[in-house]
Length: 453
Image 1 (cartoon, rainbow, N blue to C red):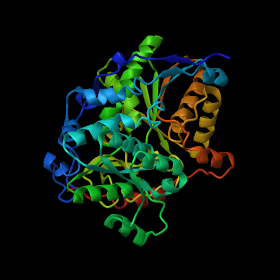
Image 2: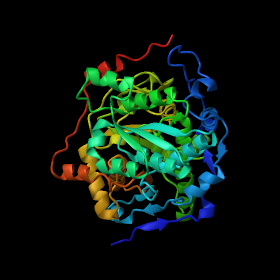
Image 3: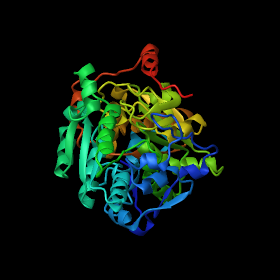
Image 4: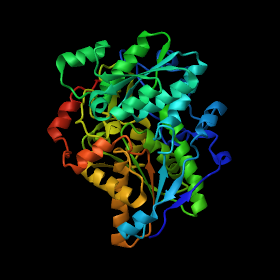
């Protein structure tokens, strides 16, 4: 059997700056609006939630933003991460395509999330913050921020979506091992949580609800700031170390991708792998196909509306223009908890609206089947979220088999599934099912969108 090939960079080849795609956009992002007044929001409005350096990164138009040395030092514990040529998978598919995957499961918490968690903890520590509040779906972001908080001596409070709190006890245990306090959301600890429970006592929860709780806590406590694991510009910026490294590693391999694929929930890991390649496309240097893959159970890019919406259920967060299913949307409790968000990152949404990426939605049963096939070929069990990228990669490789084309395909394997074994047990036991929404249900979810004058 043909061996898998690994491409490694040395520590001194790790990027020393993040790539800011805002410098290459052919049209600027729509402005961010105040949640109450619907007027343009300013830095002072955001300072209650974020340190000023992150606010500056949110609006920066500079193509490169330097990574602080203290952040680089921590990155070096697992970065540069490996790039693999999936020869065993290619052989199993009998495809002429070349399949490469960037593997982020080697990080301290097993996913791409520490790339921004470390940076956010650093900037908050520099500003004298004592505690961070946040939300998490599957627990990858929560565990990453918990670990980063421990490194910088920050308390971390995590509101974990209720269905994932029950489904993924080991991710919760990991967060607690790092010293974080983890609360099932919606909870009785916040006004926004109590309001949801009063109306929907048996709710499975959502990332929108958990964000409301975390933002409420941060806004009311002077020593606490809010940290978000996806969606915002500065979060996507920090993840671009993934794609920047992949560029160097593909050069080592003598290849350049025809297709780049990433799963999408809020947009951070997709942006991490894809933005450097999208930027090259926008500058007219390349013509790479970019594919964003989301769950059929939460199809913001493929069935949502590109408009202004709140990032949370209680409407505490600023209004941003994005593809959204409506801030009150509560998706089914699929195991890909990190993809269960009602909206898509404004940057990813804007790029999609400009026509620089393709979006598709997949059902969870087919994604789990793809993940199992990948694991049996490559030996790595993907997280349920990453299975969406695996599924599309296999589809594109099989299309190459039909056409005889030898395409180069790159995807981001954004995390391992070692804490998701219950999900795989449920899959093999036939307990999982596919969920899709009718057009009527989508229309109902969009009915409460804010009206912007």
